[in-house]
Amino acid sequence: MEFSIQLSAYYPDKSYGGDRVYQDMIEQAVLADRLQYDAVSITEHHLINILMMPAPLQFACKLASVTKHVKIMTCIVVLPLHDMRIYAGEVVCSDIFTDQRLLLGVGRGAFPFEMERLGVPMDSTREKFDESLDVLQALLTQEEVSWDGKYYQFEPLTIMPRPVRKVPIMMAVMAPEGIYHCTKRGFHIQTTPLAGNHQLLLDQVDAFKRGKEELGNAGEDLTLSLSRVAFLAKNTADQKRKVQQAHDYYSRFDNVYTGPGIVENGMIKALPREMTLEQTANNLTVCTPSEMIDRLGVYAEAGVDRFIMNINFGMEQSESLDCIQCFAEDVMPHFTQRKISNEPSAA
Image (tube, rainbow, N blue to C red; front, top):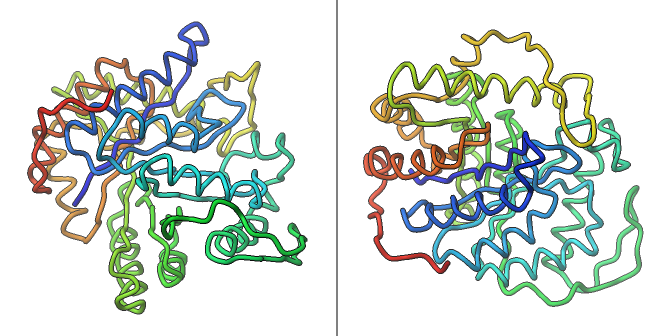
């Protein structure tokens, strides 16, 4: 099993500065590269101060300039917010500029606040995403593409430059049946077992394996990534402190995900959670290294190819870096043959 770090893009205090947020993410990526993580992950969100990355492809290029080995995954970019005729060319350029280390994770968008203010109501995102994905794939694989759909109508055109390889695309999917169909179409998969639901995890992995098997040799390189909010803790007291921090973060996340979407000057208002602190603790993977090994062993045994450790809930940069280091030294060796390198990164 391989490992990725979802770089932390949380901005709870404007005085900290967006430049410092992104410098922190760069520092995390450089360390992950040196420690032989397989990938780093970035997301796309606009107008809000959590998961704050309005320019994921540009940032992917920056990360490639200061790292040597890690894949750079977008988890995820929101296709309905982009014009595929422009975006396809940007994807090709980004794949070139990242030395072909780009893994393009795509999705439909999750937060009504940002989607609706950017002119894409949530009730249209599924339909627009499906058409956008079809257009994107056509533009990346064919020349002189024309289209006559609901959201796209255009005369024949060819994006330039042409791709130097088949850009790998990863779908964010949770439902097992959706995973099966997306895998059959040749997509990598990113999923999550929600609140540690083991049967759902097994169903997700089984759906991926069935889709991959039906593809035969064409699906040989497809991967299943599993994302969880996770962080290493030194002891019980440290675990409780970090769970409390995550609980506070999710009082904002819930506001824009399932709540009323109250945002003032870009800052999401913290609202009381229906979920208790104990429930939050059960839904996260915040634990000591030995406990982490036991929990991840379940995923490895099930057949997960890559674990994405999501550290985005507001920990101090020094603690995030310590977690990345400790995870590589104390946890990763139980699951991968990669050796920690002392070689400095490109930065």
